[in-house]
Image 1 (tube, rainbow, N blue to C red):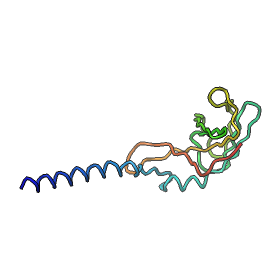
Image 2: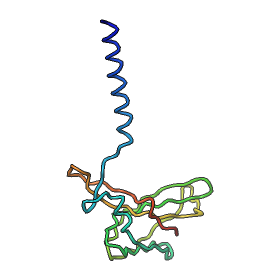
Image 3: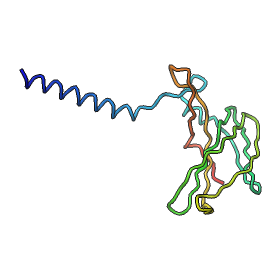
Image 4: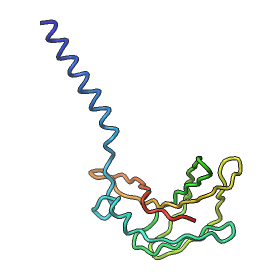
Length: 138
């Protein structure tokens, strides 16, 4: 009787641990226009250009860009920066930015990723989503 109770408790504890572990792999589903937001990333069409110390972004698509996430690479090191300016569909924005890594290191490569805002499925909250497959290199 005691062995049976211990085995049942062991199975329940293991099931709870597996559930908590697996829950980390399943993210919240974020949607935009009723579709998964990663499919909307394909509709993002933007151009970027450095003009002096200004970053000029032209949004040629029909999806608003919520913010820009910029990855700077130097050798084997990389660093992300978030620039909190949005670019509406069909608009252009020119903002002064610093593209220096920590310790004022100039990066070898700079990749700009658009981030969209979407609705969490079955919820009233919004979450940003960075389109990592659709970056542009400066």
